[in-house]
Length: 340
Image 1 (cartoon, rainbow, N blue to C red):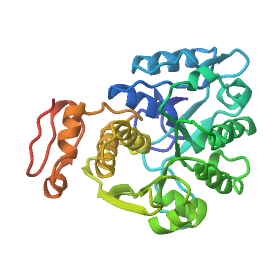
Image 2 (image 1 turned 45 degrees about the vertical axis):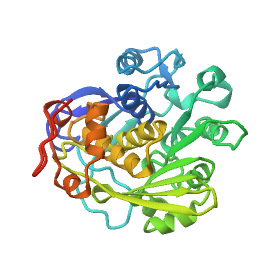
Image 3 (image 1 turned 120 degrees about the horizontal axis):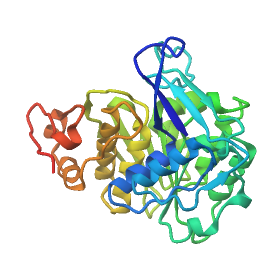
């Protein structure tokens, strides 16, 4: 979608103007992967309007293949407006001050996706297909697309799924949690926030989430500023459990950090790095997003990311990352790592 970011802090009712940007969980991941040297393709639908032109040009400008994006002359490109801050999850007693997010995507070109419109050539030869629960909420046709792609079939690529629970997107809020749980069970790699699991499924703590989701070979539970815990299935059927703390970051805006974490983890997965390194690369990519106002930050170079991911626990704990760290250098309490 096209995203409109407020020109100054405040409620949507009070902000006088907005800056145009792009947003969308799957396209965010594709852009981040392309900018870190991977081949990425985004498959979706946009209108034939100017917003659709802007999306395609911007996403292609990040190095993403958009040749399989369909244009719909009868339906518009989706847009949304938001303020800074964390999204509301719907958990009872959630602290006030969460971000306002208003979607204008009903009847959008993307909401008209159906399995029959899927281009088989777009998926051929891919190593990972990445999906999110946001698409499932848009329409019955979109849900059918995700059900098709998460069906366990011989020879399919690794299917990655970010739960991305957005209660406000579901036409029937009671439907969302069960649908998302069923979709996640059909995937190989699942990302879910600890807060999302509590809001959607009333599951509390990584062990409870794993007990409810034993099917994915890899389950990544994001724990915000605390870090992340990963359950990885071994050949004997048991799990290894790996936890890696997050970084200290001067947060500019939190929206997009989850997508960036997924991109960092997927990048390291494509490179066959150990699970602990995959988590750290996720944290580093998230830090690149957290330190900019929009959804997409400038990723660190591979050499810089590899160097930081290899730090020992003490030095990792001293990192203090602020705006510009991926290009201007890393500010730390005890460690100096020059930009590559």
